[in-house]
Image 1 (tube, rainbow, N blue to C red):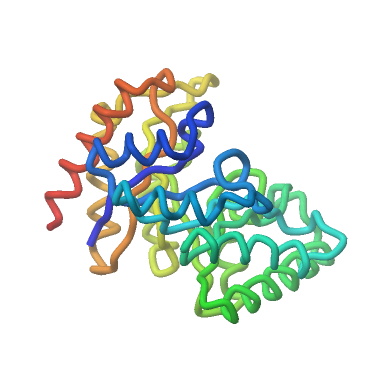
Image 2 (image 1 turned 90 degrees about the vertical axis):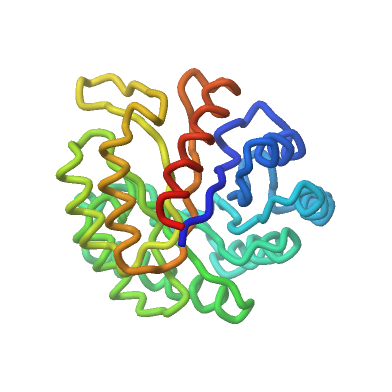
Length: 257
């Protein structure tokens, strides 16, 4: 039901190989490899990265691209380059961003253009045998349930899903209700323990947010679908906290086996 892994941007100061070995040592079997640092789309070593991941028994389940809707003069050409990179890595999914503005700041004409581009990208991914997922994030068209669901509905592509992560500016009830609404379209999960409701974004050991994550995981488990739980960022960016968070995440995962 659940696989455990990490997002490579958790450790931008490490090489991809170092992250693969750390993941293996923590019994995390999958990774989202980011295009910003660890797997740039024009890097000639992408195939070697894929081999290194396999050697360390880490599955590159997603290419965490920084393709952002509405930012390119030739979207088809730009997105095709990300598809090529994903194929070299052996990733089966590409994560993209639904623009660079919050949904409230996007007018109807702009939204129509962004949606048309998203449809184009979904079609290109489908032809390549890949799925496409949107980062569920503030400052984009997936900054709320209503806008995210509208985008998915307007794209109307079977290979397109949403990631999910809790909104650190909201409480557990808000996040649990949001997750229930988008659940049919949720694929991978970014797992972290943050709280920004005081005005400062504070990070905590994952175990300290167990009550919240038990609620989220129960919701995610309710439909029986397979999903990846990917650690993203840890307290103090430290290896020690990451190792403890990985133990916590694997313990939680084992409750649903």
